[in-house]
Length: 432
Image (cartoon, rainbow, N blue to C red; front, side, top):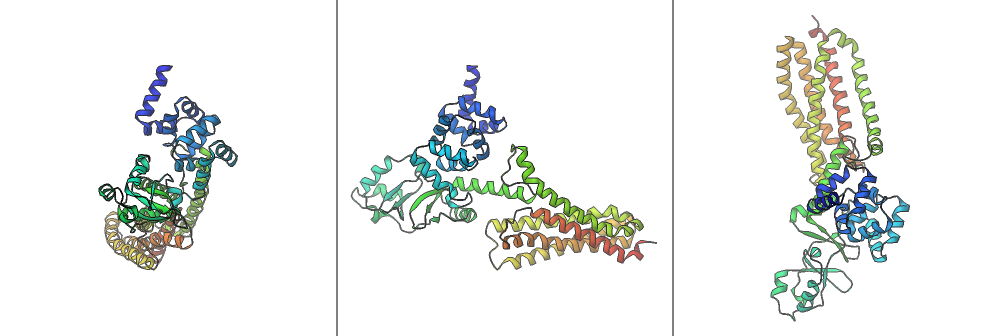
């Protein structure tokens, strides 16, 4: 038994990320037992690499003293994420058991939404008062934890961010030189309420290692690290992909069944409703299909090409919205571009499709019908793929939220309607 525990400890210490993934696969009670047996250092190392949902579920199973010790040893921002997944009573009990200063810091962090600068920032940041001399500043920096040093930020006595100091200038300066005379007042900071996407744009554009975060009065309250910002952006991108198809943005591979049903079932009902709408369109033209059964064979081709065209436009526009490429006033240009792209691609695909159908059926009428339907559906698909996320954004809704479901509805309904409609119009060319 001791050998097994030793192997577990070595695994966690040498491969904490892999150990966290393995722990995610265990039942919560089993994972809590493993966590209870680990040392404080290894337990904290493992806990901060778990998803916040799973970490919160495990903490609820641990002894209160053990929970307090682990949360005190972890980075405060990560602890704030985890506490948000505890129920209100458990959260307050956990905070009450922590040191007062730590609890106050966590309460402040939890008041900021996760997708803002306040929700992303690391509050442990070292700053240098502007009225110190070089000798005193260096002595102060030597006492600071290494993981808090990215840039040398300078503040006044009220804690307001007033400048940034170059390490080279600090080391080469005279010990009696003032920090204020050496610092640069040209620096970029972000307000605590800034949206995560805007922060990612700034970090990508300027390639900063970190960005200082200030409150409404300009006081330095934290920093956003480059790696954490990119990780948050990656997580949001994955969440957007999930939401586009009707899954919950916060779902994970090992989320409980209740979460899967709660997040997905409403959108499955929406999808079912839209499927009935597409079926109703087909039902309207039932007589046409009975006269020319080849129409039923070719229906999926029209709707499938429309779906692919719309998905391409949707992906490009979603990226433009996420990276702030599509600004106010430019939406019309994007929609027109995607519509024209759908038209040109539709013409090219329609020619090939018509030729293939003629080779298969030797029917000029059938080739004409599917060619016209292909052009119309791909134009509408390009228009819809661009317009749907833009409209959702204008309505103050999440553009990623099940856009693909709405898009599939449009391309299916329009594809079926125009294909079978054209078939009815040109029936004399189809029936000998």
